[in-house]
Length: 304
Ligand SMILES: C[S@@+](CC[C@H](N)C(=O)[O-])C[C@H]1O[C@@H](n2cnc3c(N)ncnc32)[C@H](O)[C@@H]1O
Image (cartoon, rainbow, N blue to C red; front, side, top):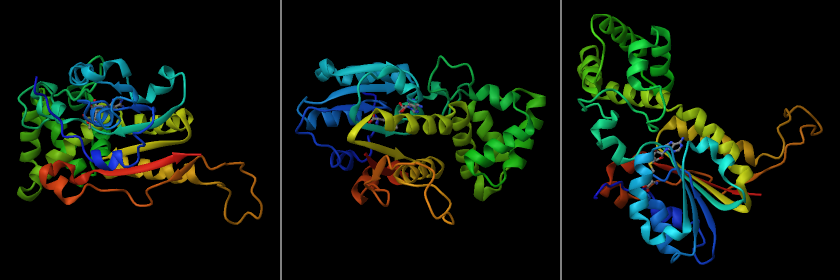
């Protein structure tokens, strides 16, 4: 069927996995199945997989690609924050490759791309009710402005949000293209592309509640790993990476009492050993082959 997604840092992921033994891996973000496929091949089919995605279409496409390994794979259409409800036994590895796939971005009907003439959508899970169209046409000025500031790190958040609110009183903002043209009109020449990118990213994060889901997922993931099991997370922007980094740092700590306190009274135990003191970045050749991988960061921790 030819749907493609370039899976980032496949070799780096493999370097944290023992593919010689029979192990179980949760692929929390199946996408087009690229990582699961590469691990299946590297382990010559010895691995079992529990694969999650909140995008039903992606699961169907991945299923086809992974059909040679179908005996070893179970699929779950749900948000990865719900992982715990679907897993009975602890696993050896959990992988999350965050964000959206090339398939979702380039499929204009999904309304993620700012060149799309389709309705603003951006739902990864099409069964969800909230979409970008509702947010753009109904959220109040302060809400919109805060979303652009907090999730898009957009400096002109108030100006853009005000312009959106003004324009939508004349006519509903229906398509991605309409929104990006409108952002162009109220941005300086220099910041046009940047502002559209930031606004679209902010909207996507809000529609899919991405940061809260990530926090919930990370919290649950630790209780699902066997001792020495590994959590591997690839993030694509600083908001995600900060959450992953802080979570791993906190989980590694053996005590969270104030430094002025003489004796520990918190009972906090370290639950994770960080294996990547600094995040791993894609190598030069990967970046030149797939420029959009340049913002990827991989962090890995091992359960205690
Ligand atoms: C970057 S792609 C993963 C690509 C995949 N690793 C591959 O090699 O083909 C991210 C995928 O995660 C899914 N996703 C993002 N957030 C999710 C969440 N909270 N729960 C479940 N799936 C999620 C998206 O729908 C998308 O298909």
